[in-house]
Length: 77
Image 1: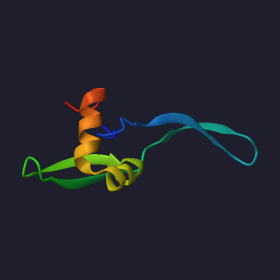
Image 2 (image 1 turned 30 degrees about the vertical axis):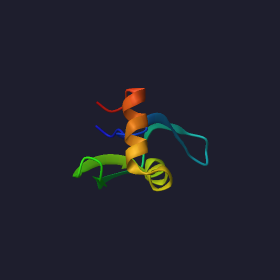
Image 3 (image 1 turned 90 degrees about the horizontal axis):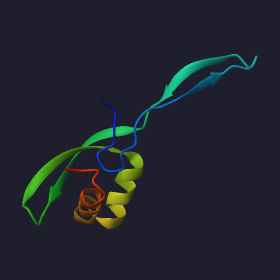
Image 4 (image 1 turned 180 degrees about the horizontal axis):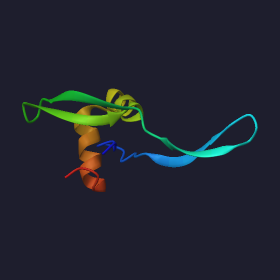
């Protein structure tokens, strides 16, 4: 399933609207990437499916802090 491991973002349903204002159902899917991150405290690599917003957060705060927050919020087991 297309869900971000960190933020929990998932596909949303909406409408494609044409110039003639015709509406058809469509999916808005998050921009997900499979990335490997090294966790120095545990000396191991983890592979996560993350959206670009989560990547920016990881670059800013660090992978350890982001994982701690995600576990605390219950998004990661």
